[in-house]
Image (cartoon, rainbow over all chains, first blue to last red):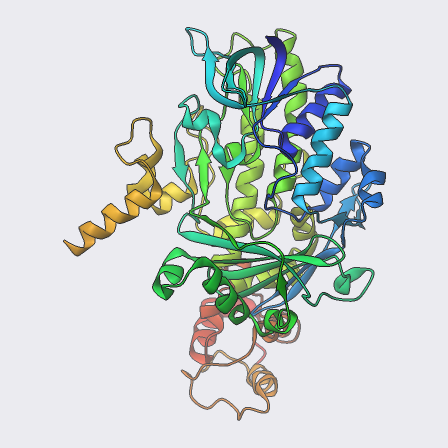
Length: 458
Length: 82
């Protein structure tokens, strides 16, 4: 089978890419291995993610489904603050806005159905191997269908939207996959009923707002309404904290979560779990050279920093939209002679995501400075960043981001053709950088931790 | 504590209420972070001491001694209000 664009993964990145391609007259094939609806985490959207859905013509459907309307993010900790959802009008004036948080099983199914309804071809199956020309150009993928048969789907462009499965990185098509700065963290999450949310309809006390609670460095929780009854609650701590407790994930979540903050405890005294507790350890990573001849990795398929400010869904959706003009150019034969036909896109995305990383890092490294910037010095810039406006076309890096870098004693060097973004996580853990190199003798982060701690004992 | 203006010490003591006034330069100020943000505002607007972005680290506001060191580095340029 042949197609112009093969999309691996039918999550929001894949289905948004499909819808933006279809607007331009390109009919992609989407390969998805799971039967939707299926559980997924990452429920809170930024202002720009909401705006993107409206651009796709999905605003009314989002309203019809009555997803919780998010007016802002409230943070409770040693310093507490609120950042409203915002947009920029045609004169680049900041305007208050709203967006949504969603139950991902439902939202992802909506997005995929919409892609299909608009003309994308859906194939059930899992990508097992990329098809590659002799020079390494990706030419599609071999798919295993539910009945076990294999099929080659040839494509001019392959979009890897496989999420944390990082299909092309695992297949060594991309550059190495490095550990990220937050790879020693573990996230637990569950859906609950009976949690106390705010009662307002707008602003700081709107009932659909995303709440973040923190106790101390790297110990925090999220509180995200996903419908009128259910709230997604997450707990993120250093993995060492969890292992020291010698409890099951479930026991640990239930007993530790309320200790994060008295305000969280108050809101969760009488809750009923409607989903088992899920766990994702060592989630932080970054793939280098995530674009190349015939391929682009989108969203989690190339990078995941940390879930604290709910940037994941927003980043994936926006990367999908940004990628489409580059895909169209490539389909028209442009940039094919280049070593990396999507180099410009790759750099654009990397820079934007680096801005996010600087923001998350400053929050943990210098919380007092961060709070001062939120309250006084860079309020507008931070309102922009929390809305997901972190890309060059959105006047980034802003003076706020440049200040963050000074405080983090960090320089971002984009001058080298390939070395423009040495992963920050690898700077903190240079000894771990080779972990994901092709043919690394160490298979997983867990193995590495085991070996490293054995060395310490010896 | 020669560099910390008296009115800043007074402001700190008011912020700490009902805790007793600070007497020891190494005693933690025990002002919550919102209080610290207000303290920085006060330093800038009422004492003429500009606090740079890079100086907004909690260690600089831990006690009177660290605050004194911070203000001392600003030397003559900051305008004396003591």
